[in-house]
Length: 116
Image (cartoon, rainbow, N blue to C red):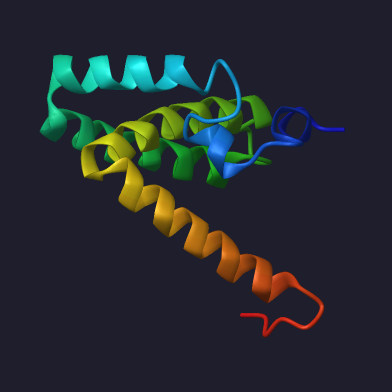
């Protein structure tokens, strides 16, 4: 099993966004809140853009000199920044939309689903 699969097996969106594990739970929320307060919303929005770009590059390079570890590292950065964006734009609204999108995806992959 690859390292990436080991890292993410059993994971879910709630865990990524601060619910379901100690690391991703209250600690994630607390540290992200402090980062927003320290650096400011505008700075953290810009940082999120940078981290998303770095993930894109890591994904493109994987298999061409890049490694799974590089991708996992960038995913971790993106999850932290996504958590900050979630706080900036409203946790309730974001969580509701995540649930809607998960419902839609679940419907698409069900045996009677419509697919994409």
